[in-house]
Image (tube, rainbow, N blue to C red; front, side, top):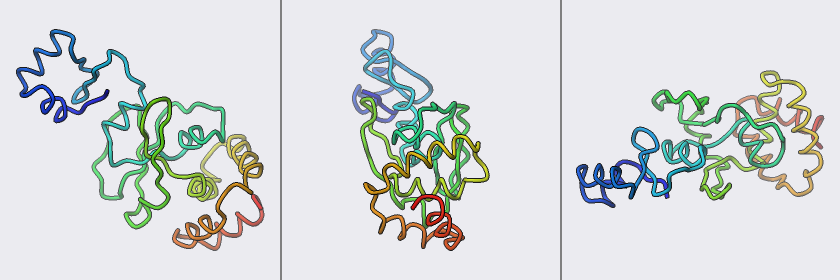
Length: 180
């Protein structure tokens, strides 16, 4: 089980007892501020524990949803537009307006790790918005997967999301021309 420093202090009593537990092997210090009762933890679990208010998005979210086989080099995390800069080299921070940050978040378990990720419908909107900034072959691969599952998606949710985003007419047009 992954613990923050605060959770580890609560579990072991105080900072001295925590350092004793680390010395005895009862708990392991994985990185600054992150501890675990297991010697090894999935990197995604550490990232999500370290940044509990962030939402998995971008290429890694497409990978989690099974829309691409390409494992991204970095974790794309959406944070509020006024959030502090994340200095973790494993993370690419994406600033999102506060009014759309929590739109379409789902919590799911991925390889034993609880994650916050945008749902497939929100990620379709993100795909259409990022069309010009992502590699064309990756865009086409994900788009082909979306075409295969379009009947399983909640179209009303996609339309609702599209109406809230800037350039909603462009998103709706791309949705009609490229996906439907």
